[in-house]
Length: 252
Ligand SMILES: [Zn+2]
Image (cartoon, rainbow, N blue to C red; front, top):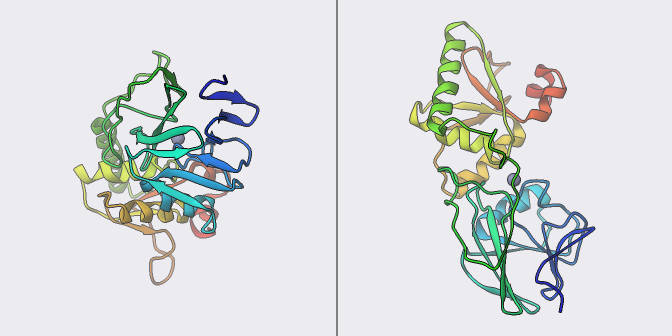
């Protein structure tokens, strides 16, 4: 008998269910933990993910992808496997995948965190026989300040830059991190934050999902001639650092 989930050169395969979890190569049937690009890749025949991930999948993978959204906790059958998604607390829609096959329960965590995050449901403990976990920051050297403290520091830095007559540009991933910053900033301000186009597109999906954040406006969409961003906060993806700031903010 094959095991419930095994590692292949294309990623984690559930052979008896006829699907792969977050496959590295295109497959017929992919089960997706969350929409970050190292987990959700284009080219597969069809995708299963949490209902909250569907809109993000369409915006990231493409509007024509065959994407099936399933509510958290709802079991669905693929081959010989009963599958369900459970909140992972990482980004909107992020899931642990519970796979019940041959009388055993496997859980694939994807990325997860146990700290509070206003942009997604909290991590859920799921009983299982086998737990396959990602552990990017599991080493004890990684100790983070409380989220509220980090958000307060960002706001103070922004306000100090304003006093100094500067614009503030904060580089953060366009999916997940940016929206968490925007949600956490609500503790301190309701001012509009300006966003890079890639960030704004995904922020719009979060807003449609009901996530509360400070208001945002895409950089460059301000009517009239080039706006001076002195005193403003701009969120942009880390990749935009590779080009000149002017190009990053105005050219995309
Ligand atoms: Zn991730």
